Amino acid sequence: AIGSTFSGWGGACLGTSSTCVVSVTGAQSVTAAFTGITPVPGAFRSLPTSRLLDTRVGVGAPAAAVAAGGMVALQVTGAGGVRVSGVSAVVLNVTVTAPTRAGFVTVYGAGITRPGASNLNFVAGQTVANLVIVPVGAGGKVDLYNGSGGTIQLVADVSGYYLAGTPTVAGAF
Figure 1 (tube, rainbow, N blue to C red):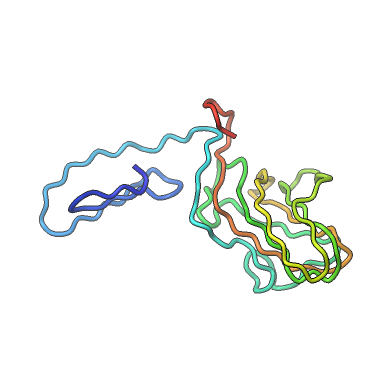
Figure 2: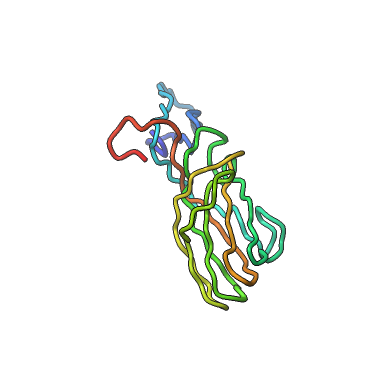
């Protein structure tokens, strides 16, 4: 099982693969059977939080403020533990900081029309964060749009993702 540990030896299946690593210390007789993880469409996979974007220091985008009306295209698949393919949506904690004017940020799948609703609203000088679930768009990217008349800095941390496909179990996304 994912993250399982056993007396005298340890094993772990990490994140997005069905490959398990087993470490044994000392001379021991070990018999183990591992079954691959079967992806369930629509299932959520949590991840240790990983920073994918910080425009203040050049993580995930150039180290520069996002211009008024500007947009950052952020690669989410294959980053921070997110699978390279087979992902329908990601869970991001998005933070705006150092805004020079009031405005909003909208996060949406790359290659689709920007929705009319915002994910974060802010005033000048305010730092605001919000958890968003955003569909993954073209090329495994999401877009973050600065809907203000001034510049902003953006930070985004991933904490999980949803598997692509038609959900077949209750509670799937």
